[in-house]
Amino acid sequence: MKSLLPRRLRHEIEQPLESFQREMSRLVESFFGPEAPSFHGAWAPSMDVAETENDVVVKADVPGMTADDINVTLAGNVLTISGEKKDERKESKGSYSVVERRYGKFQRSVTLPAGIDSEKAQAEFKNGVLSITIPKTEETRAKKIPVKGEKQLAGKP
Image (cartoon, rainbow, N blue to C red):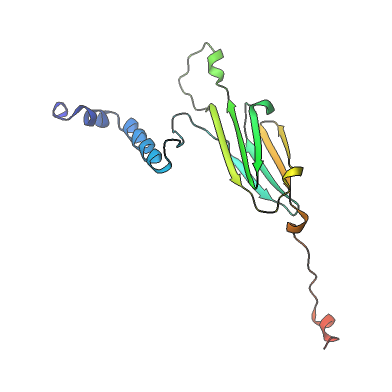
């Protein structure tokens, strides 16, 4: 029965995971365009974005990299982290059975809340974690407003 099927369909039956991956890549490319992320080895660091009373703090996991491998830019309120993680396997002479770690170029952008002071932004790299702290402007920092109780209001008309 297989011999009656066209070659393309025969391959899809014999290699369902490859066919599925190819179809998913095609769908992602049709949605995002030719610059779509690839499922073949593409990677991007995991990020946390937190807002404190005075700052916006972004942390990105970039293990196996150095500070020189990473670029950080802030344009308006869009923070972009990019870089390239080099493939260590090129230096190794052993053979691999499983390869799960990802290598190559990456870029992640995140839109931060309005009212940040980009001139005072700081980036620090330690133990594979990139930490970026961007202070909020004075106008956007939360201000405590005192609430008057019933006794305080009783003396006023």
